[in-house]
Length: 341
Ligand code: G4P
Image (cartoon, rainbow, N blue to C red; front, side):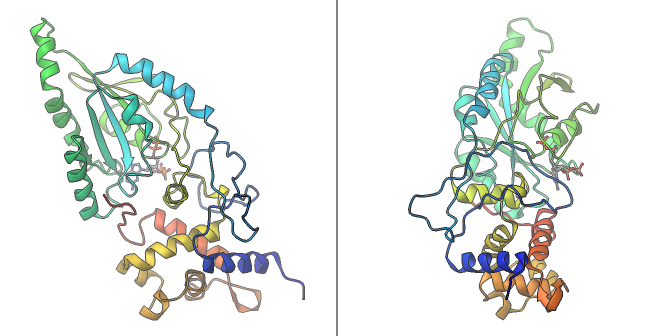
């Protein structure tokens, strides 16, 4: 009997879910059915496939053109001369993956403050652990929720404390009310525009679901004595590790259209099964037995429990996958931190 494309896709995903770690498969033709595109659109290079890999192993890893970053790095290096400190915004749910590892090196020598943004969607205990971890590394970190504004009012006092010596030395040189300048950096979608809108009273940056809006050299007055410089260019996330790519895709920091949505959902289920958040289990009415199922079968179960069926009464796993990812991104499955210190 001829199989429908949906059945073929489902069967492939099924094999992959049982075949261990499934890769972020390049699927440029896949349609993004999520409510909104949430990510930058870097040009993916050809997926890397190990010479020995078979078609069902899907061990591809997404890579980005290395040239993408050169311009931004140069701008950062140039603009660093203009600022007294750097504020790096990262996603509290994925503090490792949402961090561009070049930042620490690029900004070495400048006082750096880290904003653990979107903490409203992260596990509060894990966020507290990250704050202590970073403080042990001599990095001041503040958990913030730029959407509601929670925590944002700590930014200026913490920065003032960090820059006290510098402010005093400017004053000693005769400067009255010296203005401190801070550069904001972060990968796309971490909330830079939202933060700038919050802190700079006047709305100048546009929060958006795509990068580029925050591009350009713009100064914002934060408060008396503080000015902020918007990110000097688009700072792409950097990943050559499959887990990092997956975490960025789970949170919507990179476009899910370059990934196979069902595979992505299966990988997310692998993690959710371990985390046992009541919101996840209650939302999809999952029993203890359900949680012991292989992830593809669990996705089928979620589809059935949600009444997502295709002709013949089969579970519409593709639709369930989109729903799962959308609901995870909206924190409807609980406040979840995927990366612990
Ligand atoms: P960027 O400049 O770094 O690229 O990020 P941007 O501010 O555009 O924020 C990306 C998305 O993240 C936006 O959602 C924004 O509302 C959301 N966001 C930013 N900070 C927080 C936060 O602390 N908590 C939560 N829950 N969300 C946050 P969007 O859906 O793309 O846009 P919109 O519908 O909110 O306008």
